[in-house]
Image 1: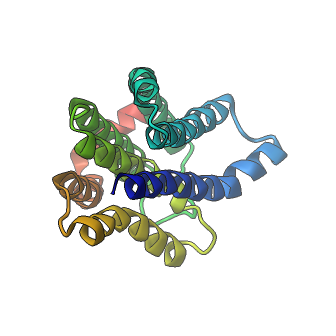
Image 2 (image 1 turned 30 degrees about the horizontal axis):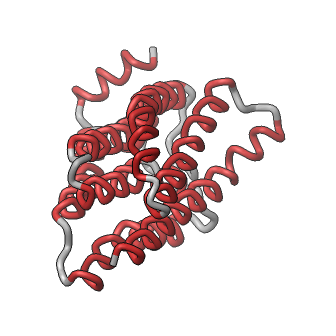
Length: 227
């Protein structure tokens, strides 16, 4: 069971990184080639790419039994996650200031998109990562919450940029999102509570934050952020 778990979580780490790399490669690469990428965009790309690499490294360390190194690296990772959240939020505000509303552009205005995507993503990632840290002594809960934090908070931005738009993005994202619960059910005939919380936060937050993005209160507050 342990070997199968190691293979599953390591594979998920690589798959998530691949989706993010492919998605952002379609938008970040051309900006580098065209010389339109700003220092903030480069910083954002470097920090988020580092997190995906760190997640893979942490998964491999556990698979190889290097749990002591995994724990020491995890302490640094907790501080790094805080920096990632801050940079992600700032990048979202700057993008809204320049009229960004998704890639490809969706039906939301820049202010609505700011709450429904960047702010929502960072809060989901931060909340689930914080829960994972709090549950660090419960190995089964910890690794599932970390998986859901990265999936629910960071992968959507990359997956939404995959070639083909929503017809590709939605099946890929939900396949990754449900892979953990399905694996649990196939191997244990039960679904760990961490997945229940992770799925609930990921799915409900999308509906809640999208709804709130239409309110006058958010519009007024967001306007002060980008002015």
